[in-house]
Image 1 (cartoon, rainbow, N blue to C red):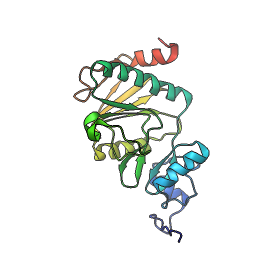
Image 2 (spheres, rainbow, N blue to C red):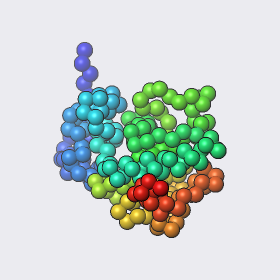
Image 3 (cartoon, rainbow, N blue to C red):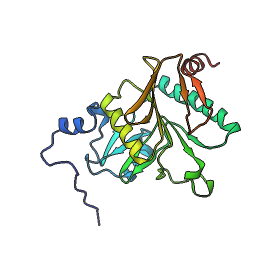
Image 4 (cartoon, one colour):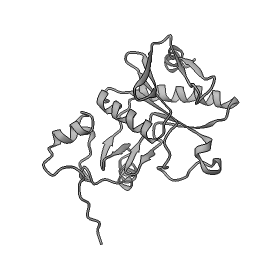
Length: 219
């Protein structure tokens, strides 16, 4: 017997209404099959397996994750610095830009980089399911051209509601970063400022300029 889904969106909504609801993102990032409001985690995995594209699950809607080569490079290099820190202070696990996480039932986000404390993993064992039900302690977003401010603010709220303690948004065009400890508490740094791990990663500090330099030159 086939499963019948009913969209969670009002029946009189237009594509523009849905676009507004999702943070004003480009319509070509919103997958229309399965119909918006009816998608599931199984659809996230099936579309990725079939197309290789990453989609987040937002209110029953598949929203394509946008990330270019430069943004991916920055995330990888940042992961290198955090992993080097963890060599001497093994506090948790780092995942990259395809590490799907379930923040809430029906809400799947994919940070460009995430850090999760070992204590969140039962028996300190990494989960084998493709979308573990674990919020990140640190979520990093490297802003891409396709991201909108309202989209990122919505993600910010969702992260902290799910239990995230720290969010870094890195603007690769302006070469700045925003460090959030709550949705309303933010410090903006330039290349001379430091990404600080605070209480989550005690002693971790990385000058933002060093991140860009390493990404650009390899040293």
